[in-house]
Length: 116
Image (cartoon, rainbow, N blue to C red; front, side, top):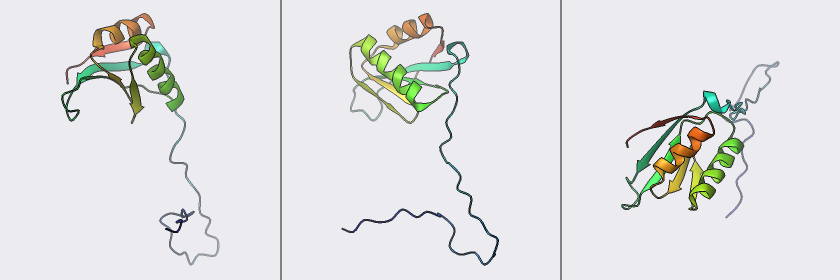
């Protein structure tokens, strides 16, 4: 298969204007991470579409992806299990809801337990 080139000017086919300048907009702007006290994290348990396996999720983090990855790494280490960070949400394998809420409270995060 031949490699496909990524289009530089997506959505622009042709312009008849002599003074037209295409301005590339960065779709991913870096979001500044809020301090721990201002974060409003939601912690819950989910087993839908996971073949009956339970995962603990942490959502609502406002900040950069690298800070979210760091928090996910710390939570996985504290629980001693695997997990992942996808779509702005931390997934921890197993039922560690109370342990995660306790740790986040000690670190001064705003934490709320949710069902779901």
